[in-house]
Amino acid sequence: MYIADLADRGLPVGAGQVGTLAAISFGAELLGCVPLGMLSDAVPTLTLMTSGALLAAVATGSSVSLNEVSVFVVSRALEGLV
Image (tube, rainbow, N blue to C red; front, side):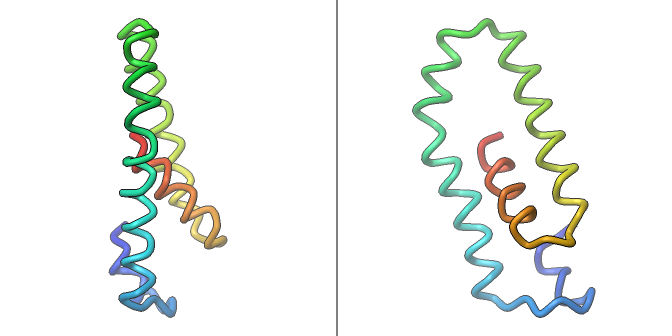
């Protein structure tokens, strides 16, 4: 689902909210790059790739349930980590 498409679904979403959600995603990526980079040196490749795929599945699956705004914000942060 596209974030900009939420307004078409009847939700009151403005440009500031879309920008905030994008900033959360990019901020999570920025904050997670060093610890996850260090983790990639310590953990076997197969384990790291499998856990990344599972984390992406959880993030994508949680964004399907758009009943709660907090769930959507957390899913965007998880997508930024993956």
